[in-house]
Image (cartoon, rainbow, N blue to C red; front, side, top):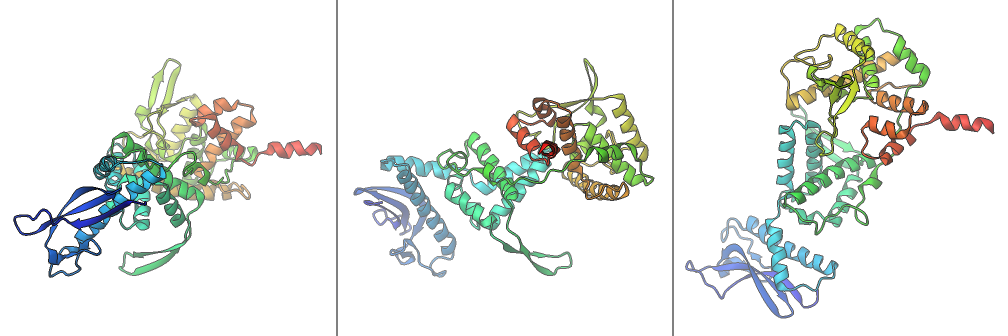
Length: 436
């Protein structure tokens, strides 16, 4: 930055009526000057010329700490803008700096924009995404104590790399128990998939802010040759039921009502293309729609419902599926106008409904574990996710083209489907090596 300087100054050429002087940010480039008002004033005895800040004395200025933080923030803004010019090899002028500085000041604050987006998601019923955004915001606040002052221009490649290092670092957390006891707990570092979870939310908020004019692409940190979120993902062990276990689950009823209810719900998910538990819980009687070829269960996946490209999934309501619904509801009757008996409390909506279904999911998985023990499914943990994995693998093992499986799974592209199916422990290799 040769020939360039920036600092805060007491502008003595303009004495105000109260005897004070205005404080400006002064930018110097090649002996040319430009001043930007900081909307602060000071007497000479309040000002530390050497550091360009108020003297640290509450008798002279009771608000010196707050005012000095603001001045420092403006100087750092100037520094960042100039560094961006240098990094992009731009031969900038003072007028270009002025445009960048004023635009920077107009940008939305990261924390407040996050909070606004979270409220919008709650209002529109996207509770899952609102929780994801809130978790990401909470983690950013742990990482960055000055997040409430940050604007989007500051969320650059250096910032996200530092955030990623923070997520990979084990740390302590302190919280207060219900009885008021202070508890300190060691936290492990975040896995690649957890880091991916946070960064996808941050990227989504930044993309939304850019579309709404609250941010610009100038320092956007994500994408090729930048910070690639896709490289954070770690392959998880996707398990599917072997055919003999699936047959047991289809044919062997449990004498215990709560386990039989869990078995039937698992089969409902399986026959409904691996429908998630939260989507099952949200189905209403109005989800049954008549089309040209008959009755269908029509719904949008909770996971992707907020996306513009989100489409309704239509599942043919066969006689077998009708019978399955009747069996489920014979054990527990649905409340309100829900299609199947997952929600057991009336008049729930929004966050209350979401949390209730999440609680019911926990109970469902507990019952599935007990059911797998009862059916003697050896060395196999039965969970809600297994229905989707089993459905996909059953289709593949019956030579259904992957293009069709991709549509059934509601994937955006074949790359996602290939990654999904290739991640299974396939018996194809086991059969192939028998010729050796």
